[in-house]
Image (tube, rainbow, N blue to C red):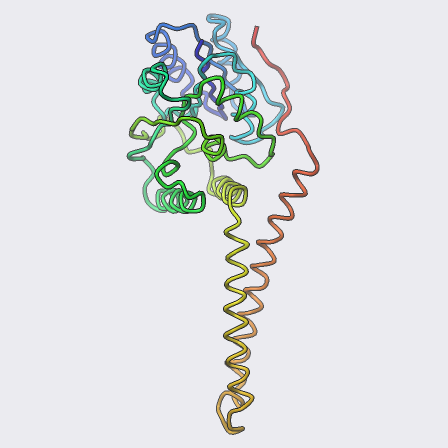
Length: 306
């Protein structure tokens, strides 16, 4: 069986096309399948439309979360309910074309891979948003030291049962699933595809949501921010020590002593750096605190699976 997991949030305008294309592709593959759609607290008629489709085809499963818990939590809710030998992760905005599932399955059924990722050879986001995506993926690839593996990988992927079980063993609340998928290892392959533009509406992942996801990814998989604090602090200590010694042994008429403006600028600069570093350390402390609370990632209001 193939399980297709799709989280959605306020996508009533594209549900018809999303389900039509997904069903056609899975039927063409010729294996038993289920489509698990997780409604992440939609405020439009997305849930009602999904339930209408379920009355027609019970291979469409619906999980309704009690509120909007976020993209990664919604994915996790769907993955935990997957029954398939193979499980596909796909966003619900049709930027990832369902038709590529067939190509993923062809690679997967050969037995050479446990995970097949979608590699975005191009993407529709342009301008500032596109630049931010580019920078994040480059930084994440560098800090994980797996540049060829994770660069330009998103959620779109297919996992076999063993790799999915391994992925679900990770219990952290601040989740970045493409990173966790890489972390579990196993034999990973990829297919090239061009990420399309949204069919309808504006992206649901606003800039602040993307920033939170980027911070979760970087802080969860790297000590780079802490190392950055240490080395910049060390450079600052050495620099200020040299300047202090120079001022101490310089002539009293030297402009460095008589003019306090450079000193004030230096103090303000060092104060700002310290505040930034406290914020970085605080982010690690806060994430540790959130994990220690051990709250569930999501709550399910209703589920329509049987």
